[in-house]
Amino acid sequence: MLTDIHQLRLLQLSSVSLPVGGFAFSQGLESSIDLGWVRTKSDTFEALSLQLTEGLGRLDLPLLQRAMHSFGQTDLKALAQWNDLALACRETQELRLTDTAMGKALARLLRSLDIELPFSPEEPLSFVTGYAMAASHWGIPFHTAALGFSWAWLENQIAAATKLVPLGQTDAQRLLGELQPLIPEAIALATTLEDDDIGACLPALAIASCYHETQYSRLFRS
Image (cartoon, rainbow, N blue to C red; front, side, top):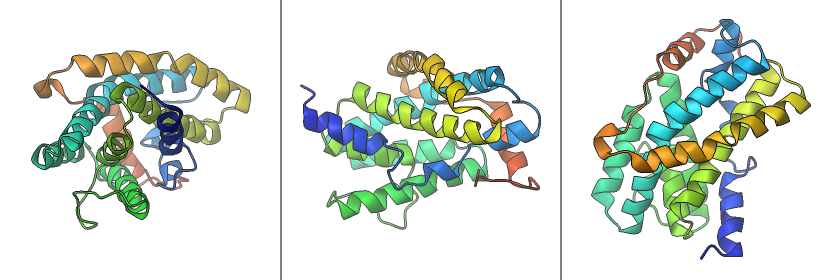
């Protein structure tokens, strides 16, 4: 049963105020706008919907499910393998930086909350793995944790788009409403994938991320 405490922990874990630095990363969106690929609210919807279904749905969410199970079963070997796969699937230096910087910040926070982690502070940790360990420790079921993880990603992306496209606050809220129905679809897809099917292929995202490394002027770290 999902208690009030579980729900409050989920809100804590998914909050934009969680000090993991998600606000500092656009994950390729900034360069997509600079390249002229994303110019309007409609373009933003297309870009984020694709990342949500083909990125999170095929990579991050199935890894979240497996990492939560491994941590809950104290299967540290499997947990390390899923963490390695998450990092190996980050196609550029900046996308890996996004993942490991947020993962390191989350790990530091969890240790401050007296949650014992099976990774040393020096080991590269995917944010997905850190989120999975926190959700498992607090007894949050996978589906609920996946909703929170996806919402946190989407809210950060919309916040970036609001500054960069730019979008007005009303359009940003409309966009959130239009993209929300895709979250349950992505979670449902994630639960159908076999281990060998996990992985995302988003070439334009990788190209945009590479371009961002040498972009003349930028607001975000990736």
